[in-house]
Image (cartoon, rainbow, N blue to C red; front, side, top):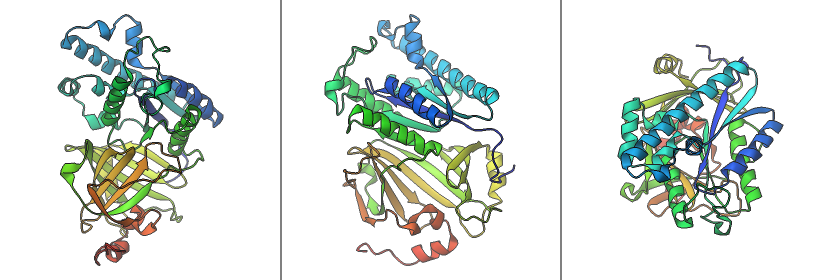
Length: 387
């Protein structure tokens, strides 16, 4: 496998999910994003909401009285969704190989989990012989738009969608369930209602622009070095196991790096290769390719192994990384749900005790943590909680 940083002959297809609770602005966002992304040279393709297509064809969930009917209905959505995604991705790759491409999805496959009992969803996965991580992480990014019922209640309405029958309280609960279904995705972004709707659309575009390498403001995040945390106090969360390896590169520019990653849950893993320069490009690897490339590890580095706990707390998206073999070092990353606003401070959850804020401190960037010399410098001497 060639891991050089030469120009790719085939442009990748970015699959980006737009999801959220009822009346969250998905339809308006799709139209807005299509125009904005087209202005930046991307061909934009839309996969419509599968549940709406089925309902409009006459199969209405609201008329179903038995749980088996609902389960069969959701499984039909599952099958159609997978087929749409695979056909769209394969088609645009073949027809437009040299064009920049984005497929925007009006909901993704994990949304189904929020609308049925967890056991029924697990049964579908068993029948399809597929895991949650394979479904969740098949997308380039997931953008969750919070329902207007949460933070902009005066704009919550059923007028523009005859299928929408939820009260504002029900909409908030559905929104929460959908959001939690996507916990653990490596590029999950949450867009709330802390601004007017026009700015909400702009923040949605900015979140996607950061994925695609379009120049735009980076989201506001803060990092903290963690002394300890109470695991039994964590809210609903996903635990992801990550192995990260830096490879040798012939390129003399130290800013450009080649990284392979193993990422998974419950002993099921996905494998990725990242080319990290001005932008970050990811591609999926097979396990065999990953093990082969692992032999090309940069001898100046060591393998980073960590356990990541992802959860929401107090209008923040939280990632708690617990590094193995690094004398127990843990790092908490906090990102406000609104993502871009500058006038809101993040707050460390009360069940996590932090040493200090390390935002912007290069010695705690993973590029540096992986270096053997940094390992000795940082972890042989005990860290000072008062520093």
